[in-house]
Image (cartoon, rainbow, N blue to C red; front, side):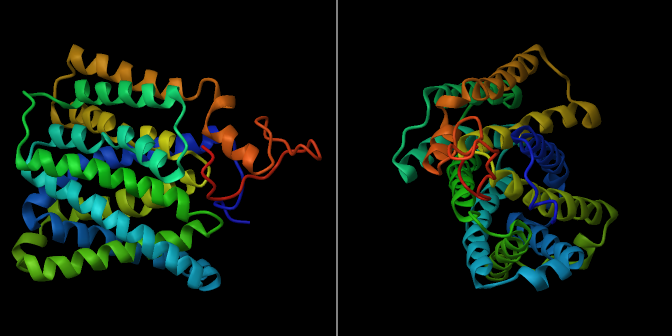
Length: 328
């Protein structure tokens, strides 16, 4: 039994997703320079294709055993959503400031509950909607360092928030009863190939002088191996056990970690406004953990014949969660 097959307490999956958010936060800062060097589309292609190659090397025996038409289809679906979401965020990052892009794109924590509402036709609990709104205010306090205005880059970043929200919901739906690692590899190659095709017809090929620098190689190594490869495995594994709404909130922590890393490594000043923003965001996340019996997890569990305590009504024994079920 692999690590993705074992069942852990929900707090473990929450910690995994928070770790991924930290990795993305640092990658957000590191990747800004690389995007400026080769453009958002080439950056997206290199990021995902590099991650796909790394995962194939590490997971080849697993892929050889578990690859099938079902996982291929699921990976293709997620990969297309991943490409659109990430490409628009990177495009926005190249057109506006990192702080604005971090705030606007991370507002998927607010869009996910409404997208899930449309898809499932089940209104999210009031606490989830309130927590998403509080989280959005907190992200704004942390990330917005200048007057708010809607530029082209801001508009693209706002669009990415909706597309990211759609990706999170799609992952929650498609990951159901599928192998996480195999799907993740297909997802990376799908996103990378789509970005490569778009780059070939819209942008000039990067020159050797642009890419053969320590700064660019270091940045792309980090975003491919950690932000993309590790981050995708962590997100997909965690989303097999958490609700789309909660996953959106936890993923949005990337903007907080982005600000923290900017303070720690790039000389940005931690202001009182940012501190208040941190408090808002963590309050929102804590709020989602209160009263779970009335939340989405309980609804999904009851639909699957599992009580809110995690026991099968018939046997009273702990019930194994359905991998990929929307039951965060």
